[in-house]
Length: 165
Image (cartoon, rainbow, N blue to C red; front, side, top):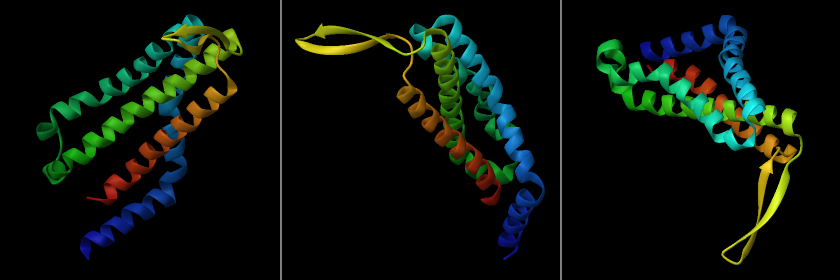
């Protein structure tokens, strides 16, 4: 009963005082990743879309690797049994930064190159349309949706983890 009361108290405090601040903090955390992706996409174009996305994922990895590596040393003993949950959380966090940087890069590419130009190429007797440059609104919408889902999962999980203590 004591643990359940503590969980309710944590959740009530998050809602009462911290939800607006939490949303602002989440946006502040994501805006630099989005802007760096936008600049990289604008400067380097479609050829380096994956590299720009990977830069975002690498930034998240750099923020989390010390905790993952030194878990037993830096984390309170009450959380030691939650290591796998946190590792999974960090993986989703890295994916969310990858997708956020990708969205930023796609916006930068769209600003620089506009709509996609496609080249038709025959490979193994199969005709394929390969985007040479630019980003379509459909590609951008799909990536924004994936980015929102991943970042929503991180934000929600960040609230749920303390409740599981």
